[in-house]
Length: 343
Ligand code: ADP
Ligand code: MG
Image (cartoon, rainbow, N blue to C red; front, side):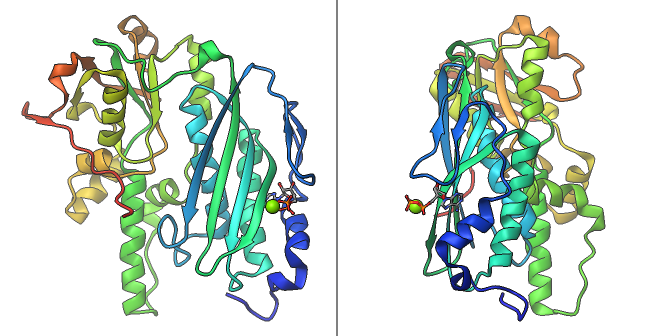
C-alpha cells in the first residue's frame, strides 16, 4: 500500500500517529469532560444511566480493502457501533477507537479512515475520547466502544415484548447484503480480468447501504416526537430472522412475521431477482441493514400508521406458537436464523 509520497508509521512513531489521528476531533458533548491525551477519559453523563457497547471490525472478515473506500470504512465503524446504542433507545455520546495495524499500512491510509470516523462523529454528535493503537501480525483490526446515556425509564430492552404487541421495522431491508454480493462479484471479475471496468452506477443505493450505512438517530428522535415508547427493540445487524428470534427468546413470546409486509426497496427486489436470489431471503438472512426492529403496544400502532419510516411487519403471539413466517401464499414456516457465519 506504500507509495513514494506516503509516510511509514514508524517515521512518526506510536505517539506521533495518535496525535495526527486524533487532533481534529473536538469535544462537543457536555458529558465529555476529558478526551484523548491522559491515561483515561473522564465522562459525566447527566441523564443518569450510562449505556455501553463494543464492536470489532476485522480485515478479511468484516471488510475487504479491495473494494472498501477508507473514508467509508471509518464511517461505518462508527455508525455500525452507535446503532446498538440507539437500539437501547439511548443517545450515543462518546466513542473509543482501538486499532491494530501491520507495517503495510501508511500514515495516510490510517488518517483517511479516521477522517471517515470524524465525519460520522460530527454527523451523530459523538466525541472520540480515547482508544489504543498497537501492531498486528496480519491485517487490520478496529474496535469501537460506544458510551451513551439515557434516563433509566427510557431504556428499551430486548425482553419487553408482550403477546399482541405490534412488530415494526424502520426503513427497508436486504440492500446491504445485495451490495456485498455485487462487490464480491466485481472482485471476482477484477481478479480474473483486471482491465475490466466495473459498471456499478445502477447499484449505487445497494453499495451505499453496504459501504456507508447510517444509524437511525432520526428514529431515536422520532420516538420522542411521536411519543412512542417501544416495548422491546434490537438493531438489525445479522438479518431480520435472527433478530426476531432474539426478541422472541428474550421476551418469551412467539411471533407472526408477514412476508408480504417486509419492506424492500425496488432496486433490492429487482437486483435479487436478477441474481437469482429470493428477495425475501435477503431481508431475512442478509445483514448489516442497521435498521431498528421494535415492538409497540397495539394502542401505539395508530401513531406510526402511514409513517414513511415505519412498516408493521407482524405481531407477537403466545410463546407456544414460536416464531412463524407467513408467506405471501399463506404458508407457515418456522423462522430460522441464518445470520452471518464468520466461523
Ligand atoms: P496508554 O499507554 O496509557 O494506554 P496511549 O499512549 O495508548 O496511553 O494513549 C494516549 C492517549 O491517546 C489516550 O488518551 C488514549 O485513549 C488515546 N489513544 C490511543 N490510541 C488511540 C486511537 N487509536 N484512537 C483514539 N485515541 C487513542
Ligand atoms: Mg494505550
